[in-house]
Image 1 (tube, rainbow, N blue to C red):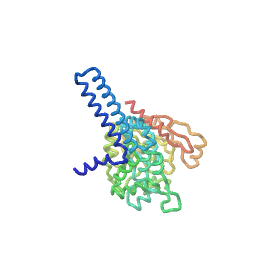
Image 2: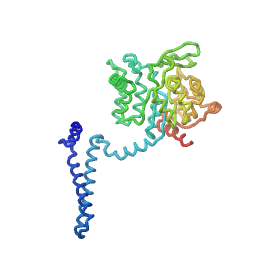
Image 3: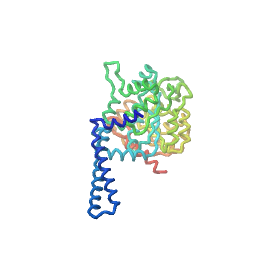
Image 4: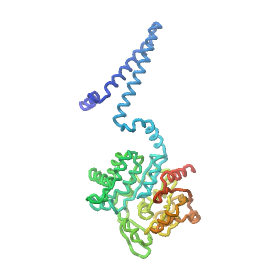
Length: 412
């Protein structure tokens, strides 16, 4: 009881800047009561006119006091740069909260590109992300601290962030050569520290999400410390997500060790409640399929009544999908999961400049062939559209892709 009284009295501490507005509001309310009570009596016209004046004055003062009090609270909790955007922020959040429930499955930069576009239409987004990464900063952290790799998780967190540009840049900042932190990103280290402090990787992601003010949520597909294993057409085996493309051998199939890894309950819940489920874009064997090797996730997606979409890559990936057409991508997905995994396949029809194609060709990466008839013969519908953004490299355009995906909901 004493603690509660102390907390209440803190509002009256000097320097907070709200006492005067609380007093003004109280004075306005008092005039409102006096004026309204006077109107109930059968007094002379002059007295009643005075009561009306007191009533109106009370309303004006009360509104002024509440307005100033509200501004004081806003100034305390919202950065000054965004105070003038308050109405827009509130409206935007309300509208986004009414958006469709979307689940995006994958990893790497492909998934984060999709999320960047989707968050402009809805905040009901769940990114289900692979934890099979074992290269670069994530691989070093995984070995040294025995936690799940944070890299793909970090990219998705930043993609969904509603925080300032500076905060997003901070999480993507990568330390340069010349120190023990060389190659590490600040975001990876932040998630690692949060995991050590909370003792739980999932909780660390939730706390990091609060820092970045996420429009949605990011969930690892499993909490098991899995290793991706590829069996090649020549009978050899490669262990490790990073090593698989480097083996530069045609892949027969991939699997996870240990087998039988369980899906996170939040991921399964999101899939059950989804209006739309999107797979990709991203590395076929090392970003998308690892999530589908978790049986509960494949079963939940296959059983879902949501619209299910696969976003096919624009270019083949050396050492992973050499010579693959769009139908080959889908065939690999189905062979590792279930025929009911998708309903639609989005294929790019945008033109790529010849000089840029030539550069990719020199790196043994080629444009994925759109063999629409084969895909339709497999029982899936094809959506053809310009999905790319041409800069110094080829990638999916976040806004174009998000609109194409969301337009499918209107066909229901």
